[in-house]
Image 1 (cartoon, rainbow, N blue to C red):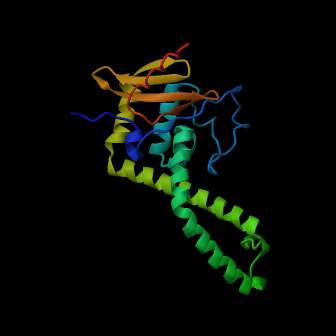
Image 2 (cartoon, helix red, strand yellow):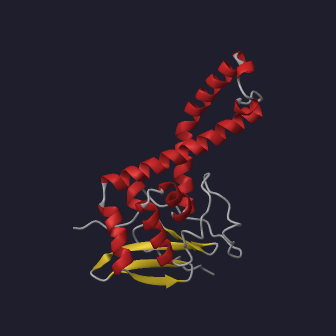
Image 3 (spheres, rainbow, N blue to C red):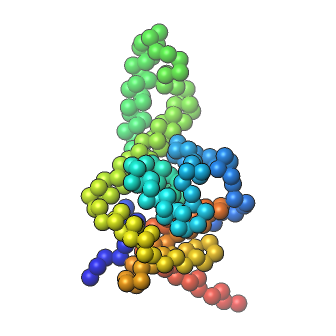
Length: 211
C-alpha cells in the first residue's frame, strides 16, 4: 500500500498552530523568523498554490532555511526548535562558559563586541540566543537530510503542483491528486499568508457543544 504523503512524515507528528488575527502585514512589516529575513516579494504565499510554488523553489535552490522559517507551519517549526533547545542548551552553556573563562584570562586581546557576558542575566540571555540559533540550524540540517535521503518527497511536491486540485476553504486548504484519493497536502492561512501544514489527514470536525 502506498504511503500517504505529507511533509509531516519528515520529522514526526504535527503541532497545532495557534489562531492569529489582524490585518495582513506588508513584506516590510514582517519580522525575521529564526534569523531569516522575510522575502515576500520573491517567495509569494498569498494563495495555497503560491505557497506550494515557493516551497518547491526554495528547496530546489537549496534555501532550506527560508523554507523552514517562512513556509512551513510556524507552530510546528517552533515546537521542533524548542525540542532541540532542550537538548542543546547544556552543551551550548558549557561551551560559552569555557569561552568566557578563556576570554577573561586574555581580556586585553578580545574585542569588546566578541566578549561573552560575565553578568549572570546577560550570560543566560546569550546562552538562550545561541541555543535557539543552533537548534534552528540543526532542524534545517535534519530536514535537508530527509530530502536528500528521500528524493521522492520533492517529486511528490512537484506532482501536487502540476496535477493537484486545490480546495480552498477560508483559512484552510488542501490539495488532492485525481488518481490518488488518499494523498493530500494541507495548508493553513495565518495573517494573510499560506503555510504548508504538517499533517496527513483532514482535521476532525469539532465536537458539538452541549447546552
